[in-house]
Length: 147
Image 1 (cartoon, rainbow, N blue to C red):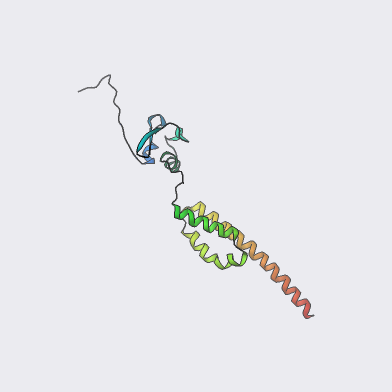
Image 2: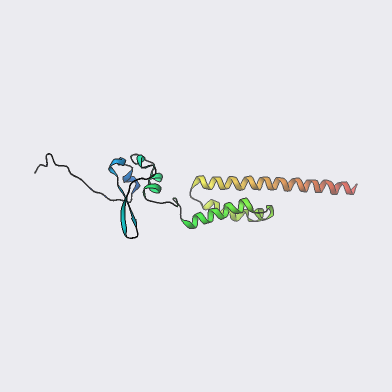
């Protein structure tokens, strides 16, 4: 049997951004399910970039991951560490630095892990330098009293 002159349409569904990256956007229809109803999504950010597109971008945009590519608990822990680094008083930060470094070292995303490490290192260096200056001034003051 030959199907000359006939058009064949293949419908394929997937949750794979890898498959999506092999298709031009003109051949992709995204369907969103909302309250037991399905509807075609007409406008989607970066939709023109499906063919050879970045897998992470396709995953987050095409599969409606508005909250990003990270779980809520991981985001909570990272935000908690960040808030401690930014807001803790110098002495509390020094006391909790080992715990903070341990949590930071668990982070799988290299960019986030390195940024948090650098931020903590910088904050501890600044705080320790300020503490060193205070102690040196205090020592100089005590030495001056003994003369």
